[in-house]
Image (cartoon, rainbow, N blue to C red; front, side, top):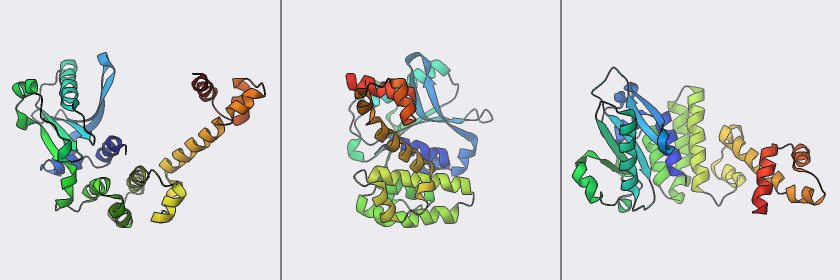
Length: 262
């Protein structure tokens, strides 16, 4: 599952959720902007940064990372990226690194050099598999639980989760974004199932109206058309003619041909 993208979307929709996870008031979210920030010199991006507004100079910057895989180099990379950010932007305010681990077994010790530079407790670790025991029944928390539970449990939870979104969120555009996120998680959690099977399993009557479904369907149509490119090449058609015949971008056809030749 593309878990990091799921959580970054979740924080865009529910910025107050981060503060609930770390035991702070969710009201703090109104003083923060959730951003993805590029480190220009090295061309990499910090995907999840909460930056406070100028009216609160004492509020910290929150650097958030989601990790659902074992990675012995994780802390080396995460802390280094934060220091590179500090060197580039030079913010005169506290920082607060937060790591959302899929479960505690994935966590590794902070490397010794960083233990000497940082106070170990300054890194806030959250183990998402333990969220199930949290008392909060908010929509955001329930979506997190949905990401971490087993497929069999997820099957039972889908209807109530979608109903909660419809009942609690009055803004129809906002509601649609949440339902699309839930449906995206469904697709990632059940990769072996076709979209038709998932639609039947979960009674997703509005599935085909979602932007995510339409994009996925369009992507499938493009892949299907590209499979016919070798046939047209054998007929002697040029890439420009193939793109016109299949109603595809010339760039997509040319890239497909180049990949086939490698």
